[in-house]
Length: 349
Image (cartoon, rainbow, N blue to C red; front, side):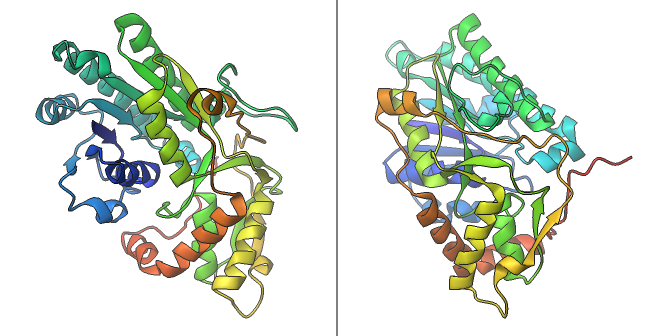
């Protein structure tokens, strides 16, 4: 199968690219190479005859149509998106453009291409849209999101992803485009740009800086190792029922402060400092619209496709800390591009 993967130089996208090539799929990586993209994330497969790269913006209609025509993919996995909530507060229209308009352009290009496919190829084509559990809003102290949970986004980022999800379903129902959707939990693992919680904690600790925790750190998240997610995405693409949505979660629900403390313990093992890293934890002003709790019920994916997460949270966090300690040059290269763990997302008067 030849898969057109958008956002394949990003964190989750690059994990999918690496996994897809490992499974023997041909991959076309379409990425605009914005600030969080990094071709080093796919360096291990870049020389493979199964891999091709196209630099383009998913909102550029002509460029996207040309890529479809040139590479003739059998399927699309649409991961390209602006995804950092703090940045969405700073520049919400950029998120609307990338996540809503970009998805609409990809859908139209896919629809036009799919219509031209010969009869023997047309039934096998898929458009797989990769989304987030944040479209469902926030949970209280109990319960979990599943595929029937009503949409209730609370941030510019989650609202833009919700809009994209609705567009995908509309193209499926109105035009018959064969679509599959997935909504995932918080991802973590190697190659994550150091602006999200886990790589921020690790990178700042390694630099001897304070470790910021928003609010009181009581927010709860469902954590999913990115390699487990990549496997689930490829499985949903190949075997998911058309028009269906699948929620993908890792099951362990932990408070943000607990995650930070586990990371600090791993940092004490792999990069000991003069004092325990936990002593550097600093509680800072919370982010506006910070959802309290996310949790995912992934039973539909397990029942229908036989998938469940294989990486325990403790093992995954341990391996992630070790990876960042052993790949300081990867983080340093990002620092040299101008990113210095600055705080974003504060509402200005």
